[in-house]
Length: 254
Length: 284
Image (cartoon, rainbow over all chains, first blue to last red; front, side, top):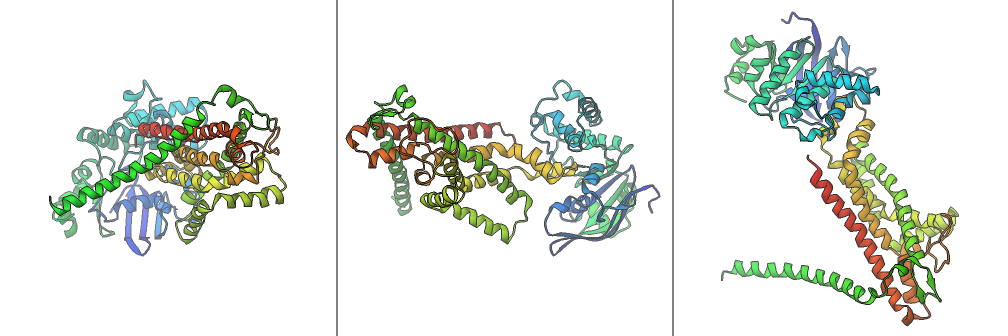
């Protein structure tokens, strides 16, 4: 079905929280440098799926995974995988903006510093580049020492995006990145997402179907832990092949 | 009047009386000490050693000794307590073992201070051969305030939002990097202020230092951590019970009590003001 270069391939994925099966037999092939939207009602497993991709679920005790998750052909749940390296390659933006209570500069430089960069010139360059890409540079360039907590909600979220970009990821995972923002800030984030797909493979969870339609190339609908439908976004929204998809996008449930 | 309204009124007055009694008790202690001790307070009282069989002079060595002991206790207990709290909150899965450890720590907090004193005597003074010294006394006090520090640290660490940890992990940080660079800086104010409250308690304790650190009288200040010291609570105890001139030392007793009370209240006040200021500054 998908004819692009594939970045992420998931095969027969089951995921458990203790005894609860949160993902059930998910097979999906996510194309490179495209935006893939994950939609579905609350509790359908889309956020869990997103967190499978950078192994954030490892942090939750009592979780278990079966099946394969391949990124660039490598099984990221194989024993020899370095989770730190993996997460460096995969940036993540959360639902609620979560800048560290540090300066703007230190926020963006955080990822670089923990991976050992000390050179001030290089740090400053990458911080500037990342802030520019996140369209925040012009608003903060005069005082990078200011606390990130003083920024507005929309600015904080773009700062978090800049922070995720700074480590040079290939994949960006976004967990409802605009759900807590006003319409103008949301529009800015969406514009960023459209620009980003030139460089990054983006997987975005969203509750907002208009948003999925606006920003994504592919859309996956999850329901009760199962992947119901995965196709080109336009197809999913205009000619859904599954009854459940049609019901969901027309607002009959969820 | 309706019955409910009367009950309400009685309940309210009972609660109000409870507060009045507590405040009255506290107020009368301070007033009593102030009335009897304030007159002797002077710069000389604070900066001179006792003279004439303790019936004259000041309390300088005791004041310094208490500061040494408290400072020593912090040096042992703070790192140990913070590291234990980090382990308990960040590195372990919350399960049966942790519950038992936590129960143990809470029980440690309930051990009477004289038991800590006897433990210090047998373990530090005799078994490890530290003698009656600042070292033994501060270690004993450290063990006594450890539960307070661990609990304050745990609370402060748990209060750091999970979202900060997630952001750090998602950027490829290890667990230790996350703790060291994100969690600890955020938790530190809470850790410190909570710990200071514990330290205030250590400053006023007599029983743990009687057998481990305190001495009746030294003409000079301690020269090393293996020297015994005078300490305010012990000094007070000695003057009040063993002095040969009880009447003559009475003003000194009140003065010593007042200084000790002031020291403890001062330490606590610093912690409380500091904490309030940090809370205002916090934005999350």
